[in-house]
Image (cartoon, rainbow over all chains, first blue to last red; front, side):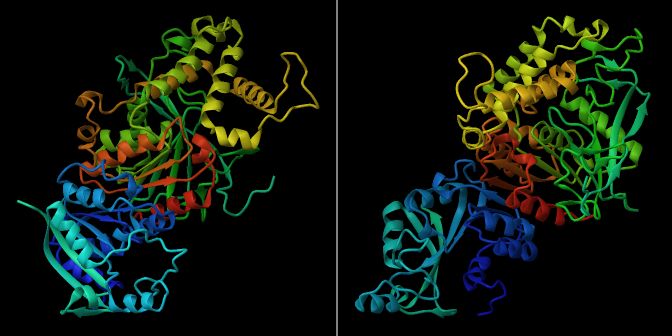
Length: 198
Length: 376
């Protein structure tokens, strides 16, 4: 897989966004995904960030960024505001996961999320050795991690089933390689396209 | 006086006279008027690099550099505007203007009323944000500026930037709305009313015609400024800056100054009463109170903003309780609703409303990055 965006999950996410769509990117970092979507697909995008350094980086990147705390929800955005609400590798950093997922599907027609899959076999091994996992996709120590929710693909899918969230598509990656078998065990990063029931 | 290399240097105000009547939002018209302004940098051949800086309650046209005849008189936003500064005068042609109704040379209550030959005083019409922007557009015409690359302002100045985007959507490409609001809250109007009452009930006010009596309502202006200063600072900053520190060793058991904060407020009040015009203060606070672009849209700000075409930068400060971040967010969501380009930074700062005049590195970093992204 090519990696024009610097983040391989962006490539997968970008494929699901059609030209000219309106997109909200939660935890948009320095805005590279939005910049790519704008330049390549004419997407009207807004990023949401709460880290001042990232807000500045977005302004430098010339993308729209709105500084709000995601934990406070998306109440400023009306129902059906955009086509896709994207949350790339940030879902695990939010405490109110359930409410935020519901908000994403209220504001967007579909949601696209990616997150580090704690079901990955290397993490089993780390825990079996008695230590919390530290890896390329989870580069933090337990005491300085921005991640507050630790879950597997199977956990996530169970929550979606319970809340009537439809899994439209899913992808798994290990390193930058696509995983095709036993994703919950072999994928270190999971990417989902989610929709509403009915 | 040491003037650094990133100062625009010595500046001279200029005066533009307009003799076509200006119809006013509140009815009537100004038959003729003058605007005093300053410019920094050079207008490019395409006339596409002009930036208008709008002032707030007590501001004026002297935005940057130092007055040629008074080197100690530094522009009020000199930390933002200059060669190499966030609003870089090597790239942009920057215009500062004193608004109508002002007391720094533009036509206002101190100007002679052509109908009477006496100062306008209280008879000067209540000009509002829409009128200022209309007058600024006349100045833009005069300077050969079809469209501003950007209009920027803090507080009441931010309201003018917003009004530009609504009144002349094709004449402004970027609006920078700093520490502002789409309309004042009841609490905010209340503070303005206390300030006005202080002036209006001053025995030296003489119904606004104090010039003829050779006096100024200094007590009223002083109180107005004191209450203003309290609201421009945050509780935390006052605690840090003054705390309960005493001016002298112990309590005096009198109504003289005990605490440093009292001394500060008296000093600021006296200083202000010495140079600012009371009628201008009254008019300007009314302009603040009246600003409400959503009024004609049933209170629907998003509907009001539908006319805008500009790209926006909206900035607020965490401890600004006079123009709270919540008010800025209202603007942001109204713009987002219309699919307009907007970035919003909510900066941590201890300095309350006054934060917008300080040169905090994160604040100026965002401003610099935004201005760098503006094509000229």
